[in-house]
Image 1 (spheres, one colour):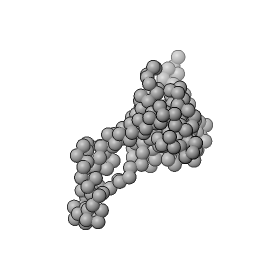
Image 2 (cartoon, helix red, strand yellow):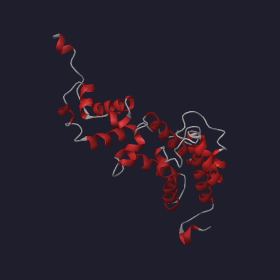
Image 3 (cartoon, rainbow, N blue to C red):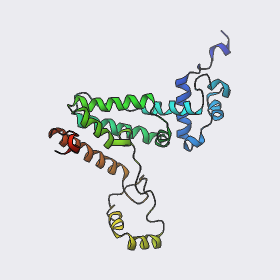
Image 4 (cartoon, rainbow, N blue to C red):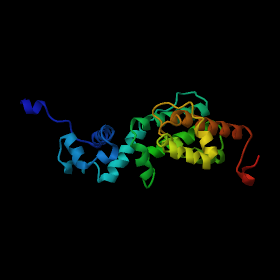
Length: 230
């Protein structure tokens, strides 16, 4: 065997292309750093070789989302349905935190990917196996919204401390908003709202409020008939 035969390159396949694309987006400035040319360079192939595995940039992005969603861990067996849903949603959040570009790509997709549908199917299955009706599960999924995939759109994304003068003027006009903003004493680093709220705390708080409410409705035998009134 010659030296060249003993050091053959790893064959290119779809999985390798997608993992390389995810790594490239993670290492750069997100999707903006990704191009078929750069991806081909990383993999040591000509750009045309990529098109045997992904038809275009859109299919590449879809596959990257599936790769990220595939990192979501199932809950431990035997966990109560509420804890199981919570665990799976928080696992989704951890997966998306590892790939900060993913939420924007997910929001831009024209339809859910196969892995996203698998995840939704699993979450719905946790509700249903916990005894919740299809009716209540339907509304619970609506209430969870994008949170079921581990992210939410923040209501306020500005930095309240960026301009003290402007902030003071806003406080005069919007005193209740200023009052609520001033209560963010639990703020930690890494928030999407600089100097504001702890995103992880707020995410888990809202998730727990939603799941507690769903559990209360389930125990009360809630249905959507007659406007969902108990």
